[in-house]
Amino acid sequence: MTSARKRPPASGHGVKRPRPAGSLTVAGQIASVARRQGQNPVTALADAIVESTGATTINPRAVGDQGTSFGAFQLHRFGELGTLTPSQAFNPTINATRALAQFKLVAKQYGTAIKSPGELAFLAQRPAGYLATAPLASTTSPAAQAYISKVNATYNALVTGKIRLPGVSITGGRVVAATGPAGVGSTRGGKTSTGGGGFTLGPITSKTPV
Image 1: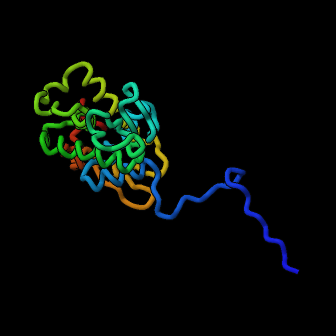
Image 2 (image 1 turned 90 degrees about the horizontal axis):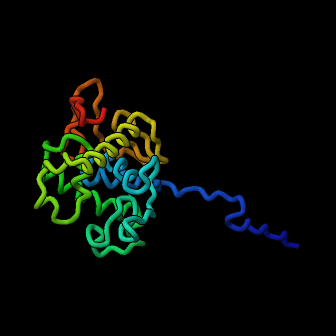
């Protein structure tokens, strides 16, 4: 007689599937894209939080602006979404790749004139053509300052551990994703060091996250 084979339990009935080796969480994917784009991963994560939930997590399937903005960085249908479909924008790696290319462009255009992660994020999130018509001074408007302050506060919360994201570890501004390094940018001991994105994190000022 042959022994009866055991049927595997149906999926969804108490069986926890392990994450494939080497895979990254949503935060890990964003941090890895930031590193490849030469941007500060902490800034990228902070802006993704502000854009997708405004709280302490990242929602890669967020839909905003009355159904016209999609994903972690809220790619807009008439802007950075471009030829992507909403479904594609829900992929964290695709979304971050498109969004952080704009971060890179802004950082190159303004360089060290950008004094904080919030300023970089604010300028990178503006509509197409904004950089050509609006000077850096536009970051002083009340609406701009509110956005900048929120990104900077979220950046601080990530660096100090008040916000923790699955799959990444942040120490002194350095991000380590689940499968390896994902970028740098620190302000240890009052010393200055340049993070990706074109701005210097330090010395500490009212606009620079601590």
